Image (cartoon, rainbow, N blue to C red; front, side, top):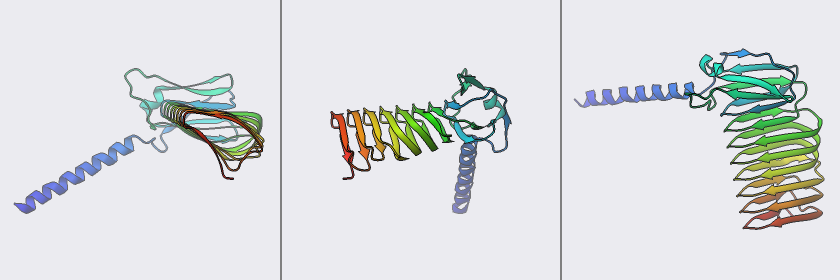
Length: 240
């Protein structure tokens, strides 16, 4: 009788493990299952609804990976040079990482991620570069080479920038984070941090702006000129 109980318990564990593995697989994009789409030329990418995206520099190409049902709900449009995702939401819970967008373009200077999306991107040299993340999204950018960079993160989102820039305007709100310690060459930093947010940057010659509501501005070392209004338990940290 004891052996029968143990056998039944083992069988239940196997079934539970199999169901869990199946559920995890169902949330991932199917490797090799996808389609290539033709779009107009673009120099920026905007994703939403929990989509995962990889952006590369190279000849124009656009590929989507995921189930036929999920892909049928997804439209791609180029608006003012920005490749944008549109999703049919009727009777549907969302992507939640079930679709992956893989794109490349000779020029990339604008990136947006919203609604819990994840984007990893390489970008091109440009006079100006913009990065925006909202709604718990994660945006990781490599190869930045611009005179002016604007980074805006909100709603618990996270932006990480690597490369070079002369001027950085960083705005973080609602517990968001902007990590720009590896964005080298900054001489002028303008920052707005609120609602428990964090902005980290390499040492600029000059920093200005404000931090409120328990936010933190963290610099690799103390700048030569600082004009930052700190309130509500916020602080400006520097290594020396």
